[in-house]
Length: 281
Image (tube, rainbow, N blue to C red):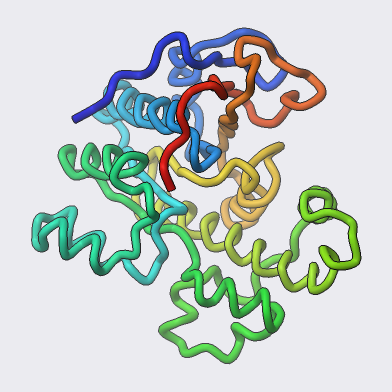
């Protein structure tokens, strides 16, 4: 079930550009509460590396620390369904019918969930329900205040924090500076922050529930690059939290660290071979 890591298709560096390895990354997990694995969603090599990191984390630390998988790819309102599947109470087909998995779930994320199921580990559905993220992007951050008590339990505590100046600048730079791109940009940024805050809160709550555990959290790289976004929110919920950020991205010259693009993107930066086939989405 556990795929082999694709040797020769990726390179590991520290955030300062020094050559490193998966082994060094795993050693670094000894002193952290949560490791954020930031991916490009269609990076097939990156998904295989994520699985290898999760597998080795269990092997290295599972005997003395509870290892938990936390995922952007499931929303908090399907946690009960996810738990039922992990406990063997419902079939995989009913799990998938009821949990709104991402299109490439079978190839990209199922191996991690199945490994957690095999090892009897928790999997956290960490994300805000997409319908509420969309609501904020249309109607602004205050629109969630009118939700029911039940619905609010699927979100980070309200009011959730504003994005930092650095994150706002980065987000708006990504969206572009044209008048069309800037229309409604503050509402869109607020919806992004709801996404970030809810994932961060989910990871923090998991650590509160399982003291001394190690959370392996998967998310799109933008959410955690440069220790911004989700990481910033996490450190508001857990002020003394110990965090490791891993940023994965595919590039043509994956054996070469480009300081202009890659420096401090994460505590570790994993560059994968852009010539490899993409995950089908």
